[in-house]
Length: 293
Ligand SMILES: [Fe+2]
Ligand SMILES: [Fe+2]
Image (cartoon, rainbow, N blue to C red; front, side, top):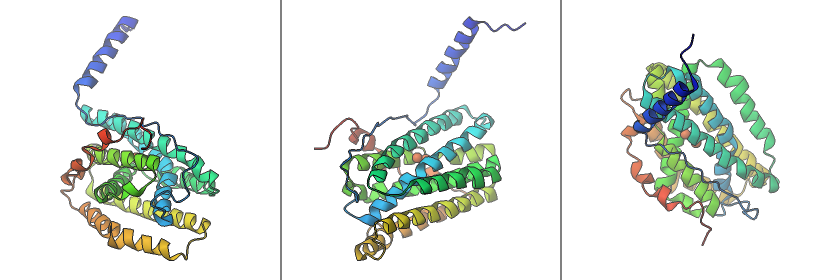
C-alpha cells in the first residue's frame, strides 16, 4: 500500500520548492506586457523599409521558431542530469514563451497595414512541425536549437552593441531590446543542454548547418516578400540601407560571419564571448510601464 498521503505530498512539494530556490539561476522570467498603439507607422524603424521589414521578418518567424525551441528542450528535460541546468532549461522555456507572446501581439498591426502575412506564418509553422522537426532525432533537434540560439545571440549582440535600435519606434524598441537582452542572458542554455545529453561534435556542427539553412533563407525571403508587398524592391534607399547595415555601418554580415565561425572551435562555449556588459543596464533602463516622453 502506498505511503503517499496528502501531507506527504505537501511536504515533498515544499522540499522540492526549497531545493529549487537554493539552486542558483541568473535567468528571470519577465513579463513586459507590451501594447502596440494602432498608429505605429508602416516603416517604424528609422523610416527605413529595409530595417523595418528585416525586424518584421523576425516577428513572423519567432513564434514558430521559439515554440520549436521549447518543444526541443521539453523533449529532453528529463534526460538532463544536472539540477541547476534543468532549472535553467525551465527558465529558458518561460523566457522563450514570453518572447513569442509579445511578438505575436504586433502581428495585428502588420495585418492592419494590409500586409499579407498569414500564409507566411502558416508556411513556417508547417515546415517546422511537419517537415524538419519530425525528421530529426531529439539530440539533433537540440543541436539545431543550440545553433539557432547562436544566431539569435549573434543578432542580439550586434543589435545592442551598435545602438541601432535607438532609431526604432518606442514600443518596438522595447520589444527588441528586451528580447535581445534575454537572448544574451540565456545564450548558453541550449548549448549546455546539448552537451549534457549528447555533446557529439559533428552533430553540434550539423545542428549549426540546419540552423543556417533555415534561418538565413527565411529571414531573406520574408524581408524581400514584405518589401515587395510595399512595391519598394527597386527603391534605391532600400538597397542603400541594406548595404549600410550589412557591410558598412553595423557590418552585420562581417561581424555575424566572424561570430558564426567561432562555433566551429571544439573549445567553443557561448559564454567565452563576454557580452554581459551589453545587458547590464538594459533591464533597469526598460520601464515597461512608462509611456514615451
Ligand atoms: Fe527568444
Ligand atoms: Fe533564445
